[in-house]
Length: 183
Ligand SMILES: Cc1cc2nc3c(=O)[nH]c(=O)nc-3n(C[C@H](O)[C@H](O)[C@H](O)COP(=O)(O)O)c2cc1C
Image 1 (cartoon, helix red, strand yellow):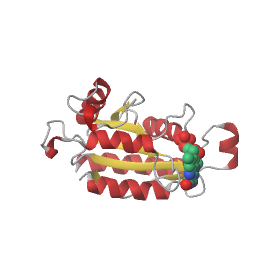
Image 2 (cartoon, rainbow, N blue to C red):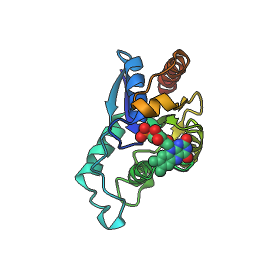
Image 3 (tube, rainbow, N blue to C red):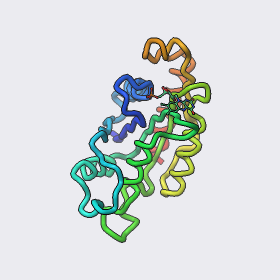
């Protein structure tokens, strides 16, 4: 069974993106092994502490390295993705063996993107992540990508209630990503 690492670009406990990722994990049940990557203890990138890397970075790199693909769920912060996600990807983009860029765990890694955000549905955040993925030579599945537009009820209740249409779109993205992983 293929292994998928889920990265949620929000540290918030009740994160809508985490709820979306959990819904995706349910849709993948029995078809892929899913692991949520906890990166709360990864420090800010600082080249003074890059080699040897902190234990938290080693742990996350090992999980990514073992995964066949990454599925990133991102909020949109000011038309981009959050700094915590950029920091994590900066660490992952760096070589494991100093000087050998081919040893970065993101290199050629298969990637799916989804988002939950305000009126944009996170399209801006995903577009910028796609640029970053190209720079890191990741293997991005360009479509489909689910973008949930959060409504007032969601913000009032902190509960992501997916419409049938959105759940079907998420299922289609899960199916497409499983196919992408087989390619
Ligand atoms: C600093 C900041 C900037 C934001 N900027 C945007 C934005 O540009 N577009 C948007 O649709 N939502 C924006 N939002 C709203 C978030 O996308 C929304 O709160 C989302 O639920 C956060 O994701 P989470 O629930 O997974 O933590 C912003 C929120 C914050 C905290």
